[in-house]
Image (cartoon, rainbow, N blue to C red; front, side):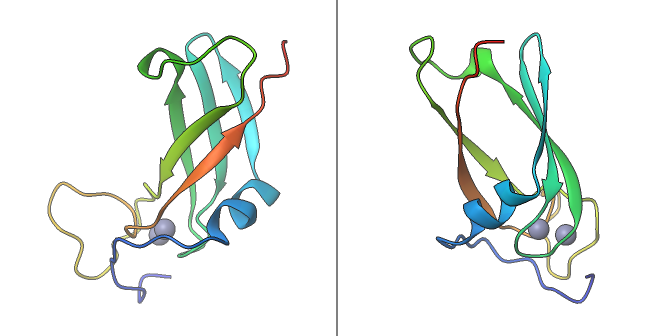
Length: 96
Ligand SMILES: [Zn+2]
Ligand SMILES: [Zn+2]
């Protein structure tokens, strides 16, 4: 959806729409979240590094996700990625 202009925006529905199709791959440092942006619908991988956030072991982690698709959206500032959409994802630690 290249015709969608870049805009820094969030919406309450983004998190649920994103997690519905989300694939989570655990890494030693955190996780890779593979899903489609709920705003521009572009698929992208988002790398979450656990070290970067302080939290208690076993507690759910809120991960701030922003769209980092490589589709050229109109009006995107130099150095930015994605379409500007951002949202929070709540990750439950499964203890694996
Ligand atoms: Zn997007
Ligand atoms: Zn996009």
